[in-house]
Image (tube, rainbow, N blue to C red; front, top):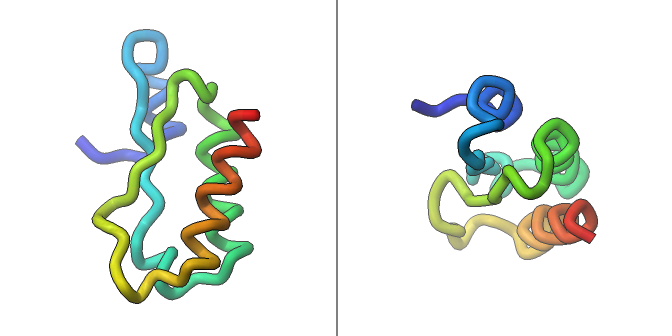
Length: 80
């Protein structure tokens, strides 16, 4: 089943960890701020110990380095 990480956590959070995905389309066509907002949305609503980040696909060659780093830096900021 695929559902937003925050919904998954509400339903299953006490039993299993969620894997949050950042859509490759957003990484490829969005701007840095939209990538940061989407990444933040999951981390704010799900405790960090119950959430793992993954991409919905592999990192493709059309994903900008800036957007990829924006996602990674946001996760690091939340994890301390």
